[in-house]
Image (cartoon, rainbow, N blue to C red; front, side, top):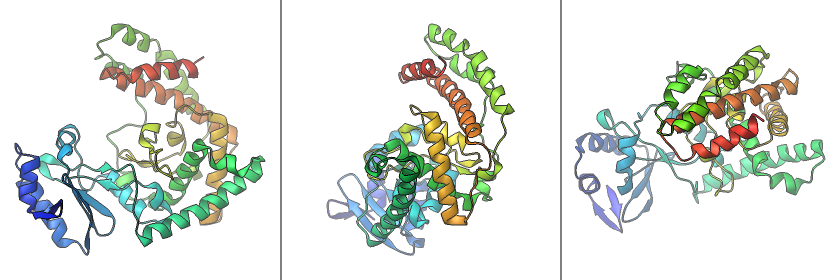
Length: 354
């Protein structure tokens, strides 16, 4: 059932109203099955446009009038790695506060599935508050140790949003290591870790602005130089874990207390440097060193051992080269679709290559 302003209407009626030009038989069948098979269902909230049910105490499936365009733009499946990542993480109490609640229509076949994340990450339940407490106690312990080691005032450490992001990334890496052998993350990805510059150039060539494209072509030497330098640096295999792979600022929800990180659709088993390099506009050296400290402290707490056994400077250099590679890669994508955000990446490229 879908609840709207206190009145009950059938699921079929609601979907037909919201999606008048679409065949709704497939989503009705799948959603009805989800409701039938659920161990427990509770209404979270109902408005004129949506009804949100919690199924199995962890997943929310709203029906939203404004999701129809999103359905057309992006395809997902109910068993994709993003859903698996979020669901597994939500079952780890300490991670719940930094995992956005995922919402969306779950379709199959032609419609696939969509999982949109709510940015408020709010819930008033007792279980939620208990998990917040677990997270806060651990965060306070680890960041207090960091403040002492770096001789910084504790209030300044907690006011540093970049450091909070470093802690959250380190915590995700530490906990998600438990899933390092899981098939969704070890399976070959259709989203390569590294592109050749020829591939990036082909993608950028569709831009309408020829001057921008010519400027992009001039980045080849820098891209290839950064790639070669990265290949020559040693790696710390003990640091390998399930990485998010796209923790860009756009995927971090700053309006919430714990700054949860969403959109892990490219999550895979790899080195943590790939995540660190995606966090743009920050001091690579200081924040990478902070990550190493925080991750080691978390690993000692969870498994009783450090994971980084090579010079921190090597990790810093790897992140530095990967950040340049990541900037050029993202810039090519933005150019290819004539996204105005490309201008911002032009500025970042100049800052990072001067």
